[in-house]
Amino acid sequence: MIRIKCGTNRICLITKKYVYKLPRLKFGFLANRNEYENYQHNKSVVAYTKKYWWGLKQEKLDNVVTYPRYATIEDIKEEHKHLYKFKLHNRMQIGQDQDGIWKFFDYEDIKFYLRNENEN
Image 1 (cartoon, helix red, strand yellow):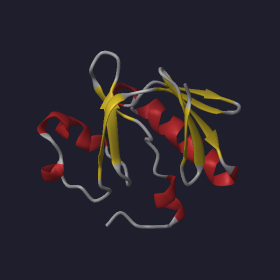
Image 2 (cartoon, one colour):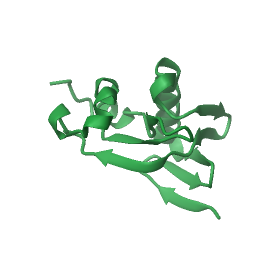
Image 3 (tube, one colour):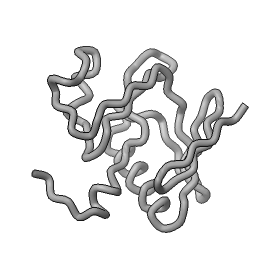
């Protein structure tokens, strides 16, 4: 069975093992590019992601937890605090891989840059 979720910039097809991230117009392509680049720099803390011409294929994580965009380290559960230093300018969205390791998914912050916000 496949679930379909629509985000701001992408459509996600969710299967038992993978999430397929299909871009919606220009910002979807930018979001995919940003997420893949972030994955390349932080492979140990981001769900396995592979790039294709049509979009991204990412391992599906279980036990998903989402923290608000402005969550501080005090708001994060103890078992997730080691990931906080890798948090981007968006919600902290994490889940467990097949080995039970907590990792990020939806690891892109293109909207932050499109809004031209500063880091303060």
